[in-house]
Structures are given as C-alpha cells and as structure tokens.
Image 1 (spheres, rainbow, N blue to C red):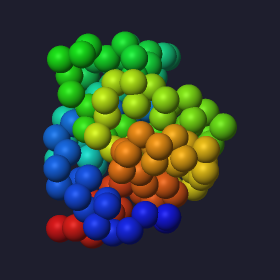
Image 2: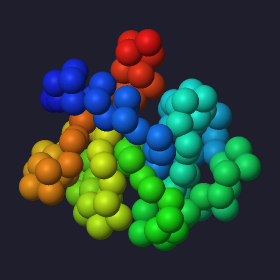
Image 3: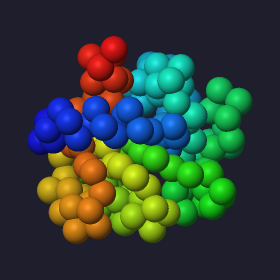
Image 4: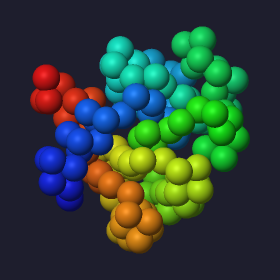
Amino acid sequence: MTTAPNTYTAMLAQARTIAVVGLSDKPDRSSYGVTEYMKQHYEIIPVNPQLDSWQGITAYPSLLTIPKEKRVDIVNIFRKASDCPDVVKDAIAIGAKGIWLQQGIISPEAEQLAQAASIPFVMDACIAVLHRQMK
C-alpha cells in the first residue's frame, strides 16, 4: 500500500457513499465479498455495464451515468490496472472525494491523476480489511 494510514482512515471515516467500479454479481469474486461487507457500513452504488442491479440496488454502466444528486464519496475500483486511469478521470469528473484501487491493482498513472486533482488516493489495499482494522 502506498498511502499513509491517516489518509485511508480519514477517507473511510468521512465517507457515506461508495461507488464500486467493476462490482460482480458472482459471489465467488472478491468484489462481491468486499462490497457485501462494506454495504453494512456505507451506501453502495454498483458500477458495471453488464448489471442492471446488485442485491436489489440499481447498477450504473459508468461513473458518469450515476445521477448527479447521488454524492460519491469514494470510488472503489475492481478493474485491471490499465483501465484505472480512465476510471480515475471519470471519478474526478463526478467530484468523488476519494479513490481506492483494491489490493493487487497498481497504477502509477491513476495515482498521478488523482494527486493532480488533489483527491485522496489509496492503491493496492483492500478497503474491507482496512475498514475492519479501524474498528
């Protein structure tokens, strides 16, 4: 993980809504399990062009299609590293307050984009694991 603990704890403490890009409807996928846990603590906005909904929650094909009245605090990304810069650009465009690349996802380009926009950024760390550690 490349981010100081105070960055991720502040992000998680202040957040109310997490948009999950690449959320799967397959229970054996890490995005499903992680998001199922986070759903107990935050409002979840599923983002996947192949889903209409996830656990009864309306899914959106991209961050840019989320209605403007839905404030996105953290964009949690479950996509391959090469997709992350474009997702970060969309996160910046919608005014996300933080960006989180899940464990195993490393994108220096995405990190640079977030830093240039002064958006807190976490890379290569599981949001659920760190959330559990905060408690």
